[in-house]
Image (tube, rainbow, N blue to C red; front, side, top):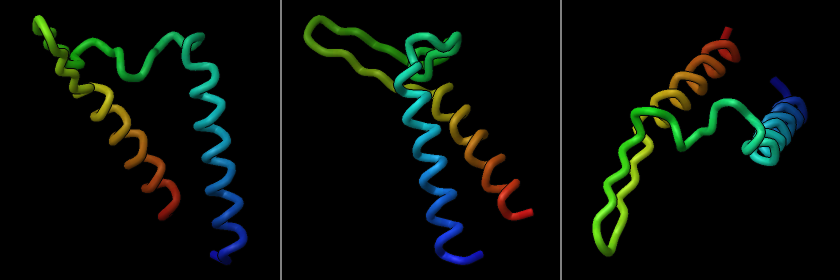
Length: 70
């Protein structure tokens, strides 16, 4: 794949991600606030680990990479 085509593809992916972030409040699924994400609130601190969000993003990225390799 020529470098120009790869750069255009990467740019389109970044634009799509940017649009998703801009419309993030209006989407029915909010990444980072899914059921299964771990939140522990103490008196003076908060620990947050987006476990389900990480698994979902990993699945999506793996699927995209698999499609690009085909």
